[in-house]
Image (cartoon, rainbow, N blue to C red; front, side, top):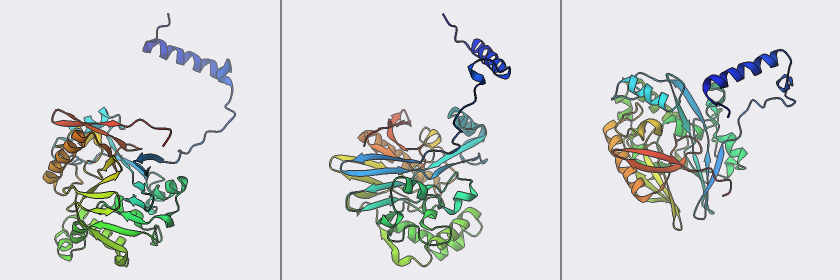
Amino acid sequence: MTDLNRRHLLAGAAALGAAAAAGLGPTAAKAAAPQAGTQAPGFYRYKVGSFECTSINDGARTFPMPDRFVANIPKEEALAAGEAAYMPKGMVTIPFNPQLINTGSKLVLIDTGNGVANLEASKGAVGRTLQNLAAAGVDPKAIDVVLLSHFHGDHINGVRLADGALAFPNAEIMVPGKEWEFWTSEDNAAKAESNQGLKANFANVKKIFAGIESKVTKYEWGKEVTPGITSIATPGHTPGHTSFAVASGDAKVLIQSDVTNIPEFFLRNPDWHVMFDMDAAMAQQTRHKFYDMAAAEKATVVGFHFTFPSVGHVVKDGAKYRLIPSAWNPTI
């Protein structure tokens, strides 16, 4: 019987390598086809009743974990969670996944990603929404509604092209009323002068929406913002942060936007405070409320920062939660 222990496997690999170096055996042959060196397009379709939905991957960013990435625990504990999730040592990886909802009468893009202007700067890591929409056969001019969950750059920067033109020129831009009220307030901007992160976000919001106010429609929480899509109040991450219920017939999915950042950290540990949450205590409360609902309903949940294709179910695990990713379905 073959012994598949680690020592024998390593010894076998060494023997094969030596044979290849000596020009002996089948490993000496060169591969006829060159390696591709590029990734496959990032889009995944799923159905919600009669709606055809598409998860569009904007990319993923990997960076050294900041000291206060999780603000209310020691960094060593956060690093251990990253290693347990097989992230590169000392690093954290955050994916980005806007959602395209084809209701039959409207083509709705929920959030826009980091923006094509970041594509070159990040060496292709982020800003891939437009190219993945194209791979999915979607013309940006065909988007009827750009539905924004909140005003952080990874959700709104894709509204503009690198030259400042509108990426979705025919779309109505729908924003949470409370989010618009907060980020367009000169008083709030003045109060943020000493906070460099907030100051930069106020400036970015101003840049993104400058001159296109007439295209912006403000929506309220708890209302159907477009047929089949209802807004859900999930504040804390930002003052007007919004999630969505997408419903058709008897089917429904919950698009949770940034109720949690990467689930390996903040779904498993809903009381951890990510550095991006503006009101950490409120965001913590929102996480419990939202995920208790999702688990009780056994609802399909889509997360902007879940691993692509970002579709799964949430289950309770004591005082914590677990994400059960949905199996890849080769049919729609």
